[in-house]
Length: 457
Image 1 (spheres, rainbow, N blue to C red):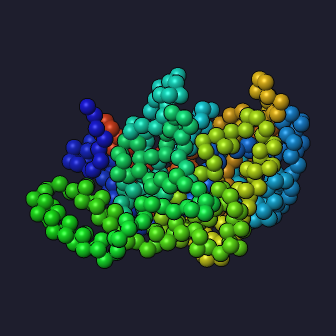
Image 2: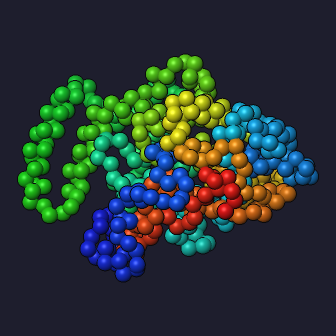
Image 3: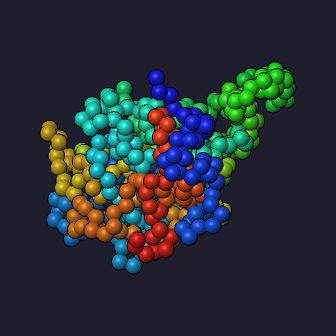
């Protein structure tokens, strides 16, 4: 049976060296100097994910001159970027466009939700063969790790602050758990911390951060001291580099006594006015909680705007976008950018707003449905990026006249993941060992340098 390489062992080191990979990349440390703009600028990365597929035509890349069966039902409004328009239902984004880079030439080839989610969150295709059924495409320990998990592997933390937090729900639909959410072949110890509760719920709390009744921090520390005395002979007798269970105990103790992390989840400490600015709904309060996790120093936060197919608008595309989806995200993002800018954290926080793909240019009707929508489309889609050195007030890339294909350089999920690793200062020679012991570089694409330079690469 083949098992993942959880630690760097001599055999794995020799395999990597034989493949020509420089071993210092395993440290996950930033390069001391780099020509790449934005290298190491981000202390945190916040992904705002619109699972199901945001329609580029009805949001960030409208085509008002296209025929009605292409352009859809929405009008457009001008932004603070001269000559650039967005959907009429993104008025706050239009006012804040000077803070954002709009990327209009994202592209890949996976039109299936599960496969596309793995590609979007890892920069790699799923390890499953083409033609596998959806039931075979669920997450597994053969998946490539997502960015939070990979970062936890190359740069483990010992301060009780989790490397990655995902909220407010899993990507799960019935028996299907979307791949790409977890640490895959690295094993469960590197899984991001998953919050599966609504921060807008008046009773919202994270039970894992609560001490049992009668347990005080002082009693907990006494128990920790006793446990360390018990564990000490075991550690001395072991020549293994990890004593992983002891490490996990240390992390658990630190987490339970970490005021930073505990306080971050207490969204009820925010003023009523602040909570209202973000929107008193699951979307808005999730973005607010994500901001608090940035303030606590969590490196990678994933705020999921809905369950797996919330943005999968095959039916009633314009009604759902107009009445719920776009206004709630527009409001939450505006409050986020105001607060990050006011606190100075925007300079060290990379914010990415994205889906796993876009929607078809042509409007369609599902059989038996009266309200039209758009289907899956990965050939071109759009995203937003801001902070950590990203140059605001610009559009990167261009799609054709119906937003079907890029007509400028296309950027892939691998490029986006590489850009994120670069922003976090992960060495360009860092790699993981897959379940077969083969080295796999973390940075497997190109840095989207135009995010920083304003010039197309």
